[in-house]
Length: 318
Image 1 (spheres, rainbow, N blue to C red):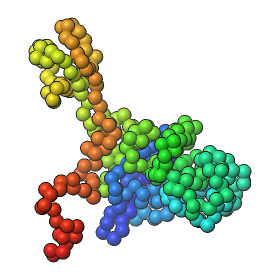
Image 2 (cartoon, rainbow, N blue to C red; image 1 turned 90 degrees about the horizontal axis):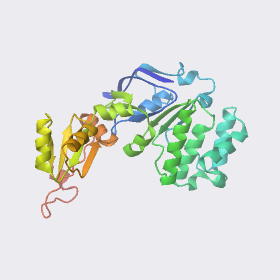
Image 3 (tube, rainbow, N blue to C red; image 1 turned 180 degrees about the horizontal axis):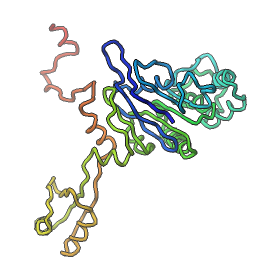
Image 4 (tube, rainbow, N blue to C red; image 1 turned 180 degrees about the vertical axis):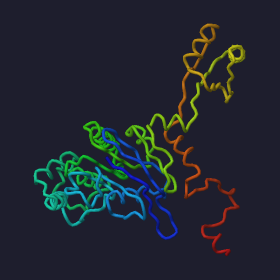
């Protein structure tokens, strides 16, 4: 287990991580979400002892990272896929890690096979694509067969096959009883991978709950109906004490199950062309929760053609 208690990190007047307290439990994939600048990478670096907290503590199986006797056997991490010696082959990069941690040479061959790099094991890492670099970083994280795994943006640079592979790998590792902690900005992928979510914004904890509960609490659930007998259907709803919101050619009902609406329509012989329960996506729920915590806002509005100032014109005015 990874346990954070009151973890805080300041850089001068900037508070990057603010009194974070949560636990990452074994047996499930825990997603770590937050807008850019929320403090996710700083938190992960403090877990590994790469940054020291201003206050608070973080423990890995009850110990600080520096106190672990066999760190690679306890926790494996991918924080930066470029953290390798470009002049070394994939094999020798992993072999150096293995020898410095008392791991057998055969383990190098095993993890290269797991991540699909056996065919290029003797090639220098500097010639690898981004996706191959990600695979090498994942191999390094797996090297000690650790009980805890931590990944920061593991799908960067991976093709669709690679994304499916890393998702399946993380879920399999969690099913084996390991602790898997993963940060990503790809909400659609996180929705398929994680069972539990920890969400932070501006360094503060915003949510620590299951994926299903997170979406339910931070989004609107409703039933969407399309019918050629719209006016009659509205009358039936009113008589049942239900109200519908009209949006274009559809009707939306809050606070009622789709089964209840379908049974009501059937009793009155109403034709329905659509009856579907609607639930917001993880992305929509995340955007709603973190709206006030986004540090960097882009603006989509642009002035009409002919009124646009050239790039740099605004600062030249000053």
